[in-house]
Image 1 (cartoon, rainbow, N blue to C red):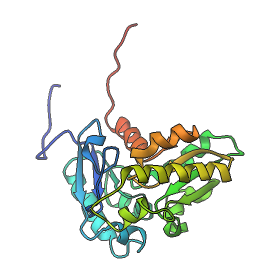
Image 2: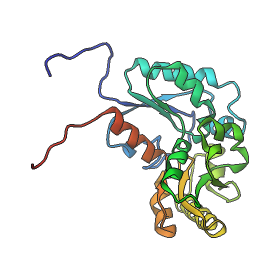
Image 3: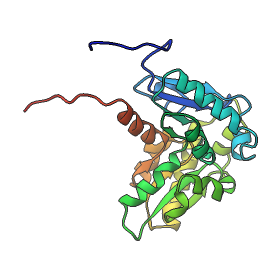
Length: 242
């Protein structure tokens, strides 16, 4: 390295993460748990962007705050920006237009890519924290509406959706895992044409391995997407035997 260039206070954080304002537990594997990542990340909490406000109330009035947060992350030197809620797909285009680094608001952005990997007769399964709130606005913002898909939510279960959306202080991890596995098994039973699953909710990746053990399909989520983008932003030199 012949010359280094400054201009910011802290270096080495390639991925910036726009955080909902929440207090529910974020266990390892959750996008909001820093130990999930094998590289440093930079978080920015967006005030008043509670799970309920973003998911069930449609994020009304919150776009300016998310744009402001994205600009602050960019100023701090991140190479790409994501979020802690898949429902922020609705803001994808406007946040991306406001900054000069790549923005990937939602794991749902993987749905067209996953579909391209499958047989033409297959569909992409989407498991969401609240199917009733996942609208055409969310889907069309990231191209999901253009590919065959099936959506199933966990809001009918007792634990996971309630604890997250109500922003509760305690979460029964085992019960949440069982609910997600149950939802995935129902999806593949009712829709055998599902060839892979995308988890919309950023709190679901801790349970992805358990889901895969039960149904045997590829599982994509915000964890797979962040790691893919990181590999694009921070390329490493190859070494080995020739």
